[in-house]
Length: 113
Length: 113
Image (cartoon, rainbow over all chains, first blue to last red; front, top):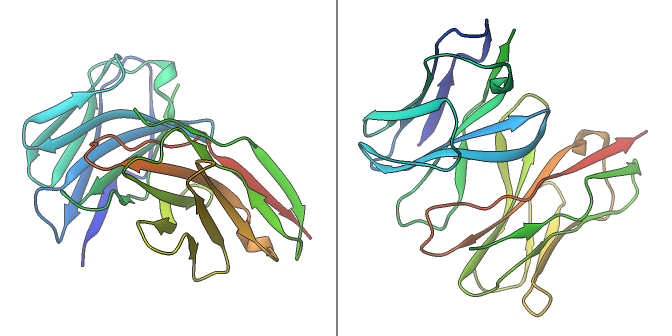
């Protein structure tokens, strides 16, 4: 069966510090991968998506970046965090050529102080 | 591009009362329809989906939704809610062939005893 894990679950970081959130999918190959941000417990903002290794599209200009060093690994990064980067970050995957159903990770709550 | 409207940001209801969460989307051409549920501090989970066939789809915990092509709607209903149904609900139409999922802003269902 397929599983998705993201970590860390909770993170408190000072303004200006770097960020690395990791997401790994198991039990499938060549998934479409997504990073979302959810602010104040409402709405989903698509940040990045990837249809293959080193194929990443950015949906919102910001100080965040994403990388996909391996087929089933998706990393969200920042060199210098802003207060506005606080939020709940969700990783998700979709089967290539599937019916569009998304499978979400448990989420990572980031607080920037 | 597909767009979606969840008209109600918050729906308060008493336990055992019926509820309807509304969802309208922009186009019925080649679309799959999904409802996701998010419990506090968790990722989203698929609640139910319409792919084809019968326009009425049901979940294992008593929710149902009906695909209405002429009204481009996919409203979610439950005849009798429980306290445990308190959560955020997201409607998500997906256009076949698209890499980018579309999510509504979410409806917060609050069930009071």
